[in-house]
Length: 432
Image (tube, rainbow, N blue to C red; front, side):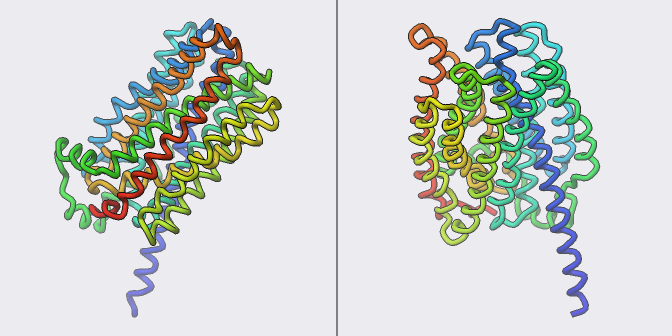
């Protein structure tokens, strides 16, 4: 009995440390998406000043960033999976690079300079999420993994909200160049907080004992473990389609409200940013909660809510892009935005639970490679190229037509999430 208070105290300290780590990682991910998404709300004023085509906007906001982000993510993740690596240090260095390159974006004088700056942002952000995902998965019990990763994923809607709202307002006040500087420089200071307060769980005796049962595996074995899981392959396909549509829609929906409804970048940034951010945060939180609550009883249900949610979201989004009043359009968008966000926590927790412990960073990096090369890389670019192609027929309404198609294509990830869910009882958490 005498040892109980000490044990309880150690457990409370560990829980407090985990909570602090989750909050720090959430803040980092918020900055990640502020710096990633601010270019979307600034795209129209940038295009006017630098005389960019819709295809160039798509290249700048998508492929240029995503190509380096995804390719570099693989070797960085491989390094992060090494038992001797410090994932907090990796994250801090990455944060410094992408924040600095965001600030430098404000000095661009032409398309190519801006393109290089956005590539720099992608280079930095490549080191963040794979390391963060494996760090979280190593720090929380598997029955709470979906909620923990959903909490981290709140950085997506919150960062997107702030990136659009703050970026739009700053553009209206001081111009797009100063907006880049204002949001980029604070991230460099945050990197100091990360390296000071964020701890590496691999240094604990308890984790080293666990690690001993999961010896490091080679690159070939790592890829075999990832692609040998039929459930994971199905989920990655679904997640890649979801990412393709999400990044394409968020870029061109902001432009849609400016071209079709005549709103300023600041108005769109605040109003669309609030809708997208709050609805996305609610959906992300609920997705993790549903997965942990119902998935603990039947592992299949970890991905049930995302599959159903995306199926319902498709026709709802179509209606939002069709209604003539922008206020009604924004109100309707709350529903599909929340439903499309249900998948973040369940999806990424499934990725971590379908591979061995020593391959978690790589599993995250491979997933992000597929998601972001297809989604972030090709989504905005494909939508922009399609808009340019049909613009002779539809004029400024070309973006609206593109968004119609994007809404209906949401049924594709819904199907693959459902198919993947059918295999989770047999595969999920079998390698922990």
